Image 1 (cartoon, rainbow over the protein chains, first blue to last red):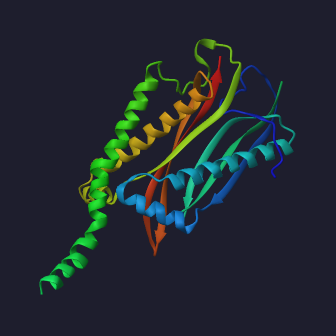
Image 2: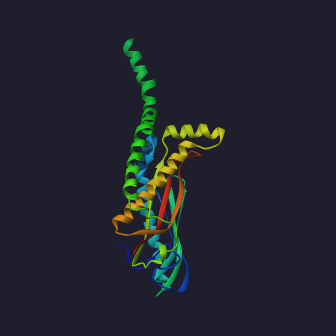
Image 3: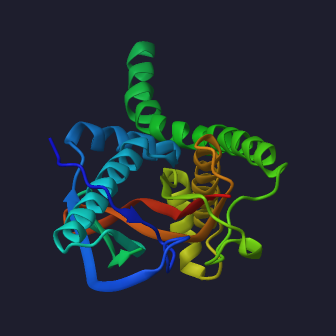
Length: 110
Length: 160
């Protein structure tokens, strides 16, 4: 089971209602994931009619949460209590795999 | 003789064409139906004004009680027919209408999902909304095949 992280995070430049006292540098988390062959086939069939490929939507959502979680663990290990300006980046690696990256600035807020 | 001809027609004309017929039907029937459903959802949530904005601060300096990073994403792919038409159109250049439609649809769908998610969690607005686009491709042999495009919409949901 993953340890719980209790950090504030936001993609705005400040944490609403709080002031930043210290910047602890850029933190990031990433993961590369692929769906199994059967779901790839399912998505291939769905590609025939077009529209949403639910298997991939789900895959990317799960992986993005994982990347976000890793970023928060990184921030916590630096002694931060918040991450501001969180950004996401995605790139597809060959073979239906995708790399998800989450990054932001670790700060302490009061 | 009659039966042999029938079997020949079945195996060499109808069966190979079935995916294309399905693809055609999907483009003409399935996609518009989904888009109409999306339009209805959009109309329903537009009644109270759009909750999404790209502003970096809450509107009119209001006090924020609670906030959360929210995101919604969708992967959409063009149908086979649309890929073929898109390929033909790209020979001439200019706008590739079939792909424009798919990407635009995906973006609307992702934004609508964010609106619904935010409303169901009880937040009032979303600030600093960002949109990311990624092309998902599959490598087959040494040729990259586009399967779809992923749209991610994320922002900070706030409660006044």
